[in-house]
Length: 157
Image 1 (tube, rainbow, N blue to C red):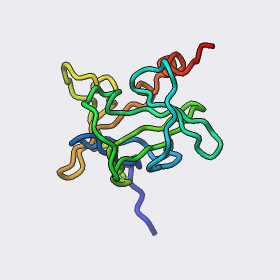
Image 2 (tube, rainbow, N blue to C red):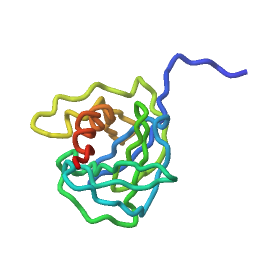
Image 3 (tube, rainbow, N blue to C red):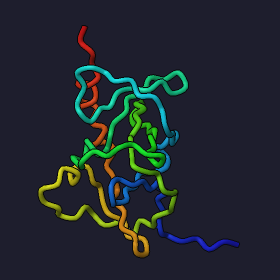
């Protein structure tokens, strides 16, 4: 017989950008890929690196370092593309590394701190504390703002 608890748990994928850990809900992640060939698309926003053909689906790729206004770095063996699906749109997010999948009790999540002057602040939905780790919960709807992406990916001919 299991004991029922009232604590809601959110399962997230933890990924790294520079020296910070970020988290997104597992249920929107379709795949984690490495070393895919990205085709540049002319006249796109700087954070859109291009598109990939993933199992027959053309998927736009966003570099989260650029989106968060963090200095760019060379892609390494650890670089991953996290394929997420939001509102019928699949998008790949380039991250420095995808660390692990963990459960975060909702009681460990605090609202976004008042951070002044950082671009990434507008993309944060909260902060989770797990033991000594601090994870930034990313608001994908703001990162993947469909208007930004549609404008960026509409190729005028």
